[in-house]
Length: 250
Image (cartoon, rainbow, N blue to C red; front, top):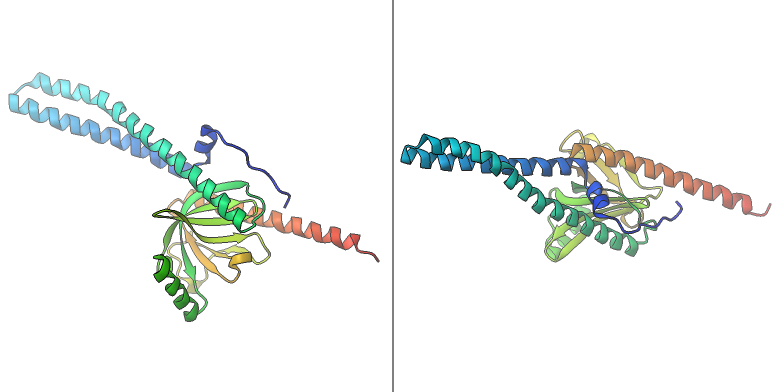
């Protein structure tokens, strides 16, 4: 795959990089904050009006609650939106560092969203070895699902988890011939019908993870983009192989 360079992005571009479902979730959270503040205001003023037996105070409280809603919803929006954008920017930066360290090649980021992964072990010895590593680094990845950020690049995909002190890479794979994204088999204990199984290539050849997400729309987009990039990479490698074959002396 031909290399590409990722440049600086603006605040608007960073906001557009946030998955649509997370943006809608943030809007709903801001609206809920305004509604709760309005209800609390009406209850407070209503209690005071009842205590002083002042009907006009109750009417004033109901009218005033309409001004409380935009005040609190706007405050929640201004507080949560920058934090979410900064989280995505931090994930972009850390994913690029890990991808560069593992020589993924093209560091152009295509898609980011939140998911949960669980490793599927081929035998008990592999699971036991992973548990021993878990005791050392304090990871909870072996016996259950772990929340991660999924960063899809043009040359592969990186899974990062959050922990004290920074991000930790849980899984990374390039778009090699061994990489595969498929539906889980009957014996792989998928938590829902949207779950996917990712078979690693390169540094994670032989490792397999089960992937699911509470954002089904973003999960679907990831699946389609992954398959498209994987096919693009395979076509590029086949084209290179044909060129090398044509250049060989007869």
